Length: 169
Image (cartoon, rainbow, N blue to C red):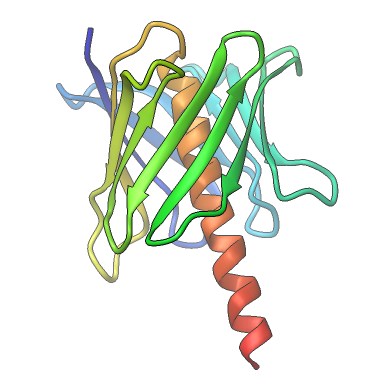
């Protein structure tokens, strides 16, 4: 069961963008709440919140919550040489590993049995805002939760780049 969606970050990381399926039909909205925080809401086309994602208070972990503010899982970066590795703990539903080879724009999400759960890639070019194509192969994680995970990974990368650039000055 493959489900593919397309979505993007805004250039200033605030406001709403639409989530499209392969037929270019709007299947949801991505609300980048503020340019000053990395929090996101994934909404229905009507604007009802399905899941939210945000950093914890003084934390480098990204938390995904449902519309009732119940935590669904947490994303954190793992240390690795020559590739990026993230771990998503889907509370009570398994632990997933998100991998990306060095200098690649393609990411793969594996479940605990090393089976492919999802894959996504950045589809933007140099002067465009960040855009993603997400293919969901698992019924254990909804596409909306995966969108929040992808945006969390993107937020962790932005935060790390920001910290590295400020440390270099």
